[in-house]
Each structure stands twice: as structure tokens, then as C-alpha cells.
Image (cartoon, rainbow, N blue to C red; front, top):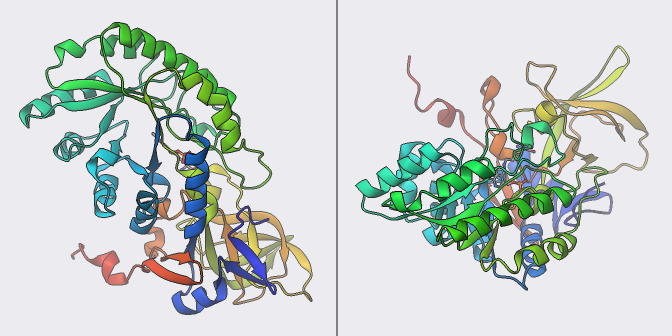
Amino acid sequence: MLESTNFTYKNNRLYCEDVSVDEIVRQVGTPVYIYSKSYFKDRYTEFTNAFNSINHTIFYAAKSNFNLSVIKTFLDLGSGVDVNSEGELIRALKAGATPDKIILTGVGKTAREIKLGLEHDVLMIKAESEEEVYLINDIASQIHKIARVALRVNPDVDAQTHPYISTGLAENKFGKSVEDALEVYSKEKELSNVRFTGIDMHIGSQIVTIDPFIEAIEKLKEVHKIVTSFDVHIEHFDIGGGIGVKYKDETPFTIKEFANAIIPKLSTCGCDILFEPGRFLTANAGALIVEVLYTKKNSSKNFLVVDGAMTDLLRPSIYGSYHHVVPVTVYSNRENRIYDVVGPVCESGDFLAKNRELQEGRQNDYYAVMSAGAYAMVMASNYNARRRAPEVLVDGSSFKVVRSRETFDYLLYDESV
Ligand code: LLP
């Protein structure tokens, strides 16, 4: 049920590594996000080891969890960072990333974001339109830089994932078609301050079969071949992120299977292969701990009204995503019941789980909503003027609050009447 070996029960109490969740809750309160540092490290190591036979670099997709300590954990392992905005760029720098370990993504980068990336000399900017390439060229020329640019190619493949997180179909807003990308690459000589150093794709997220990756890589290889004939020197072949994880009963491929399938396709391209995993590294490192405020029954439904909400974990509300919910303390004398686990927000869409068989809940019990290491805190909001929850990083038998609970002063600091 836990999908993470780093959350386990000892004597019927939930632990993250060697720290009891109760202890964290006692000191920090709820709702609270808890992350296992060793899980981050193990997943990163598993990934990089699988690809050790080819030149590759992992650029951790900070959008999945941009806490500075999380980014720093990956940097310390040798990772780069994939950033999707100036905010994430600033975070990566603050966490200690050197610019040669940063790549800048984004379908709608502003001139300011592009300039910031260029001023910092990031390794590569991934452009998604011809207009963007020309803007990068103009800005680079104004500040006397040569921009290293990759074009994001939209290979028109079906990643077979939730439509909101599928990004590699022709109808999606991302990247340029193969034909259009080739045309843009062919213009390198007209661009005084752009060098095309990369080719890029990202076909979607939470992808659990390898075939869409293979199909897309084949298409990008064709592009690479043609682009090389234009005398454009591609150094980086970036296959993006998107590797799926287990939330419930998915059977995602292992990273070793992924490596075995794609290495033969990539080993001859003469490029450094870049990866941008987010969820794979972070999702099952974390849990959101909530407290039961009230239990109640309406019509035929049992509810656990908890202090965590869609503002803390939006995924169930917007994608209908499943996250395991487990008790922080297991009581042997309690029966199971079917519950909806709902938050305090004024919407019926505010739920964390529906129709779940759970140990009978009572007021002040704690539950852990699992797989909350990716796309949880980063998608949190202040709706209903709720303060965003703190984040705790567990390392062996110790833990640290790596972002504290927001204060009301923080919520109100820039407003006036
Ligand atoms: N690279 C690019 C260009 C991306 O857009 C993304 C994710 C990644 C890498 C990392 O993808 P990952 O390895 O984490 O699948 N909020 C959604 C997920 C949105 C993903 C957006 N892009 C969710 O909660 O499922």
C-alpha cells in the first residue's frame, strides 16, 4: 500500500526512514509534507546507474518539487536542474546549481526569463517556436552573448496518459512539428547569436509504457540526421521526462527496462543524452499527513473531514488521481469502513480520496496521503486564504523543517486597504 520502501510500519506506527510520523506531527503540526532523503538518493542512483554505459546527464525537473533542499539533494548527487520559469531558475541558483547544470524550458518564456537565462549562461535554452528563437537571438545580441539553443520537437506520438499531461501530440501546444523544426534548424546561419546545440522532446508525464518513447526517439533521430546535414552540431539529445510511477495498480516499466530499450537507439548518436525526470525521482518519496477534524455520515456516505485539502494536494481534484491513504497508527481493534476523505475547502471537488476502505477514523487521528513528493506542494495554493503547509525532510533518524508553515503575515505582506 505504501509504494515506497522508505515509509514503513514499526509496531503499528508509520515511520519515514527511522523517524516516526507521530513525532514529526507533534513538533510541526498538520497538514505537513514529509519527504525521505534516502528515497531521493536511491532513485537518482538507480536512474544514473541504469545509463552508465552511455554519456548522459540527468536534469532534475524542479517543477515536480522545487523545495531548495530537494534540489540540493539532487545537485549533491551530480544532477543538473531543468527549470520551467525564472522562479525555478532562481530557486536552482539559490540551491547552488552552477549555470552549466541548468537548462531552461517553457512554452511561453518571457523576454525577461530569456534574458535571465542568458545572463547566467545556462547550458541550454529549449525554444518552442520560431518567434522565440528570433527573440533569443535579439536578446543575446543585445547583451553580447551566444545563446545555446535546443528546439523542442513535437513528435506527434500518443503517450497514453491523462490528456492534461500529454504533451507530444500534434494538437498540443508544445514544441514544433518535425517539418517546422527542420526549417528553423536550417536557419542557424541567419542567426548571429544563436547556436543550435540541442534537440529536445518531452512527450508527457506519468507514462507507463516504453513504446511512445521509442516512437518519439526514432522521429528525433531522423531530425538529428537531417540537421547534421545542415552542418548544425548537436551536442545534446534531450529526451525529457515523463517516466511513470506506481500510485495504485499501475505497472510502470523499471528504469533498467527503459535503459535496455533506449540505449541501443541512442548510443550511436554521438551526443550527450539528457534526461529530465521529475516524478520518477520524487513522487514516492513523500506523504502528506493530515488530521481528522470530524467524522460524519451524510446519506449513505461516511466522511473523514481532514485538515488537508485540495489546496495541499490538487491532483485528485483535477486529474481524478488516486493516492493511497493510510493510517499513521494502526489500531487492531478497529473495523474498516468506506470513506470519502475530504478537506475544509468550500467545494465538493475538495477531496483527497473517494470510496476508500480505511480503518475506522476518529477525531484527531492522523492519516498519510501517499505519493505526495511530486506535484503536491508545488501545486499548492492559498485558496480560502489557507496557509501552505510546511515541508519536512527526513534523513535517517533525524528530520528538518525545510520550509515552514506560512504565517498570516506572509499571506498579507503585500496587501493594503
Ligand atoms: N520536462 C518537461 C519539459 C516537462 O514539462 C515536465 C513535466 C518534465 C520534464 C517532468 O516530467 P515528469 O518526469 O515529472 O513526468 N501536474 C501533473 C504533471 C505535469 C507535468 C508537467 N511537465 C501531475 O500532477 O501529474
